[in-house]
Image (cartoon, rainbow, N blue to C red; front, side, top):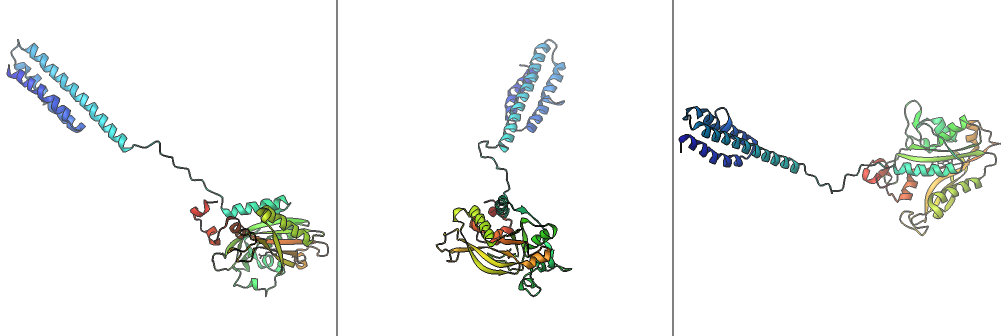
Length: 342
Ligand code: PHE
């Protein structure tokens, strides 16, 4: 066998193994250069064909070309293999289990206080009341004086009310909205005024310096305490269902005369006595009364002609009762775990 043919066959034996052992595209490229590059083994063989005796040239040349084609084919095949492996590795890296449950989009919920307020509004709207709103920053006239609350009344103490500069204050109830409404409208009046109110209370489970009220006002000719009682009883029935029984206790507010505090039968024990009602069977619900003639005078209504009732209830407290929430501070904490339950 000529030395030339020997070179070809040695390479033909060696190349397939080395190519199939290439582990990366880089290694394969190095092999390609080693065989087929400008100084590569196969290239050299083809170049040295000139030195082979002329009669052997066609046969040897054909064999050398076959070798070149074979090596090119092997490299291409191995290249495809390596590319496939690389692709599989990429896929494996990004693999996902399409049978896993998806992520639920986060849907917000309406704050329990807003839900409760909406429910209270709805009940009073159904009885013909309409909405009245007013500022949270008030003056002493609307928050106190017009409501027959004289300067020496304890509610006007800095201990109880947040005073601001310039004779202003944060409203301590939503009754000033009723004063503003009466100043702007002639009777008859039938409004509820829900909103935020502020009092200097040290926060604990049942006190918060910011809380929410709905106050109601009904002014017309010949309005009686019976109207007030019936209105509130209907309200309690709609809010709590047949269990919503009320009890009226005499009380005092500067802006109403007579005044009453209203309890509802404990919604937790139906009056049997439990921890929530502290064994009394009743829960304090709201304050109310017949509008004091002095309030009518302050807003320019004739107290001889007009009569009316007013009531005020705490939304936070009702929301706590309805949902069995035991700490008023939860309403202000924006804790999603708490809020998303409603
Ligand atoms: N404004 C009173 C309060 O905040 C509640 C109330 C309103 C009482 C109307 C009687 C009549 O405590």
